[in-house]
Length: 533
Image (cartoon, rainbow, N blue to C red):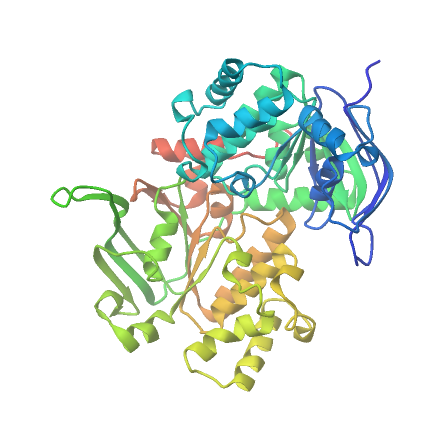
């Protein structure tokens, strides 16, 4: 009997200054060819498993128990031997490959450096051939050998990350949230390529994900982690249809609720936002007399009433985020009209424009990227009031506490003096929502604001947004790549392609009877939980 590629027994990991262990007696085994998904709520220790396997834990971390990678204990190896083991025994696909790629190296050089370091006897020609084969295999093509990472889309960079992980055909591949920032169509392609490469090489796949439906589609087994403990492990279909642990039951119920929900049309209400033939074009390099444009948003028209949520879905690059940025004044507008409660925003200038724009606020995808890392939560929320001169510091601080309470961060005194990085992902997103609401807007723009959250936190944030909408009469534009989320949360859904609206209607109708090719692609790519029938 062959030994497992990964054997973890009673593993305990405690980060420096942590009150309790992040992993507390974890047992996990993967054999060659296994495909296991590790799921659980944020902070349960999923990513810590990957860090422990690769010995990438922060300095000062305490680690005990047994961990064998390809039959060897990485914690007892010298650095050169550990570096060799990391390359030969395990490949890692990160959530955001751009943070792991050298911007000064070409795509081909990334692969060539990896191969040359671990295959020193190979000639340069062999290295080049293997690198080009890998690029072709992941759908990039050898013609992009000399391109740089910044010239690639997110999906293309993730394909490169897969090629790097599979370059040496390691017995174990760890994919840590590899599709979080990708639209469903690209995510499906990326996962298909990764799964096929693992199958051909006989590699075990450990998929770390918060998406139960995706875990069920690509893995044979699912393991549920809770506060560092493994609370359930079973075949994927069995766990998704009949979970036994309380946590798994709760996660599956939340996922099914999201898939099966359907929003009713809102009652008639006053018109808040009216957009007619809006165009947001970006200039492309060209000769002075031959202007060329990237038509990111090209003639979009919509009407948003009080208390209504409109979903914006489509593939990456279709114009969803650009539309929101144009409404915020963060992207150029080349034509069209935007009226907020009857006032034309594009005709305003100076102070009048700043006052009017208070009525439209935005919640971004990554709250950490839009919050000042040096500013405590209370100050971050209160800051817009001070910028607009709407309150003194004492008044702004009190209003920030009220908003913290409104978004469920109670008591506010426990959060107002904390830095954003000390909060969980769901808490960070609540802070971002509170900051967007402090100017009392009429329209809220949510740009992939729940895509990075696990199923439970995602459901909580969506419920919070719905509650705030009903209480404050907010109109919302909700950008997402997930039609199932849009169907349950939005009153109607617009499908964008090439900067234009190509289909619209209730989300349930789009899921059951898509009319356009792009909508059908999005529906087919959207992973769904298995049905008992």
